[in-house]
Length: 282
Image (cartoon, rainbow, N blue to C red; front, side):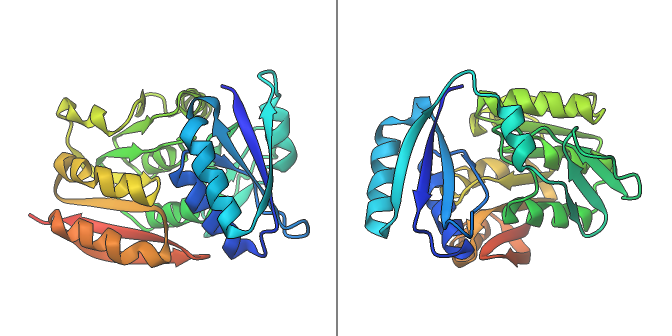
């Protein structure tokens, strides 16, 4: 897939960078680099198919926010593996889960080791929202349950869920690059028989499957738009974990969930981002 890279300068700190990520993600950007504190820059990547109004709105937002940017077309033959190898470092979550790439040394002493070749897919564990989801999973009980991972990206959440005892997980992502990357990561982690990757959006949920839990790490607008569908496919007593939105958005996310018959069980925050865990009422 062809991408355009936006290199955005003048971002004062990591918190402001998180706001930029949230705003651009809502406009169709699907991947971001880490914030470069010394240079005060951040790179965002937008698929070629989303460049029309998406770019106009993005540039309007950046201009109004006072940021400078350059937009560069990324060649089709870019070696994304080499790019990620130079930037992607292993992470550990609560000293229980290690997420690393194939080119990193194994970590045999952790409880759960997940091998991810991220390429351009979201979900390496480095972003605060992914870490929030991983931490919530590690504290949950998934034994014998069937689940759904919406906006699955690399597949890291689905992989951890089955490592924690889930019988099966459907992993849905609208991006073809993410879908193919998820398939590769499922094979690398030996879970192809328990995680089913699907290419598409929430319209796929009309097929009649019912789940014990739903994971949705996407963005505020998509969560609000698709939450009814998540409610429809959850069993009573099932849990919906959502992240991908800022801490200030918790009230509107909670209000929507309550209106659909959920009870808020927990809220977690990290670096200005938030996660909500909701239970579907009987």
